Length: 206
Image (cartoon, rainbow, N blue to C red; front, top):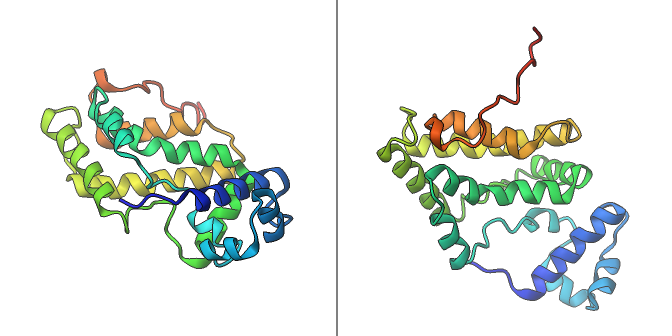
């Protein structure tokens, strides 16, 4: 597995903080270098441009062996799957609506798919498909859809609902809504569900 070098991570995390504080457009490469106490040569060694920070800033695939052990040690398959993907929710909410809009727009304009970092990390996709397969085998997941298809539906669900949350300016509880939708997609048995009440109650009126 690929782990991000400390200097690159420090540049990325510092840049994100500056983007949140001042906005992406107002922050320059000079500002980032000054805040990190590095020169431009160091910055451009790791990043081709400021825009590239938006392509690799989530670091969602840099899971340590300890983190994976913690994920797979959860009491249910649903909890394992949720822990694997909750870091995306944490990332989206930490960056805030304005910066996430910029990140999503960058993805759309460039065709970059890295907010769902599974294409170039197939081992993480296999781990998640394995969790779904174990859930189906144990009867915890009752969906008749095959595990790989459920995985791809779930990944697109995570991304699309996150985008909707940004477009609606955080008008709903992102984590609860996504967990409810994943539990519904997998048809999780009631005793393993954390979200019993629909977040869409009253959506279509009385």
